[in-house]
Length: 189
Picture 1 (cartoon, rainbow, N blue to C red):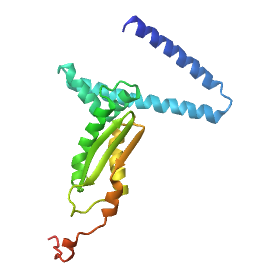
Picture 2 (picture 1 turned 180 degrees about the vertical axis):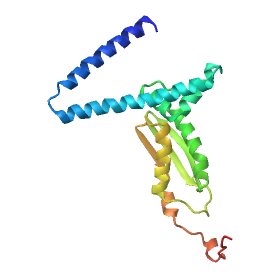
Picture 3 (picture 1 turned 90 degrees about the vertical axis):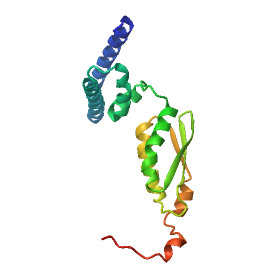
Picture 4 (picture 1 turned 45 degrees about the vertical axis):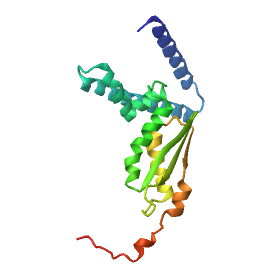
């Protein structure tokens, strides 16, 4: 560790000790307890992420170091730590694109196509549409939840996630194409 980093580390440890001392002086026991619990949870989250990081390094063995970074960013806990500390190697547009790519197969089986429209600042816009005009679609709310879950796991640092086309899909959800009306019902055997 270079001298500057060691000095910064020493300063931050000293500041942490001061803040912990200030916690002990809080008059409100509920506030003191909540602050201590918050600290425990943050430390536990870091511990889980660092444990995963060390496991990835150990599994890599003698592989080249450049193989580690993709594995770090693929692990949700390590990725979360990298994002939390602004150390993630990929910018928001790259991660948004990868998140939409990851989402496509899942949506495809539900007759939904997703496209990344734009990333403007910390605002991400994507568009959804029906893959097959005669296919059945999930409800807009279910679709929104599934999209948000996947995207916000990959891009939790976005300020706003806009999903265009949900209204159009909502109007179609539950729609039964006329070509299906007089079709015989085939029972599973």
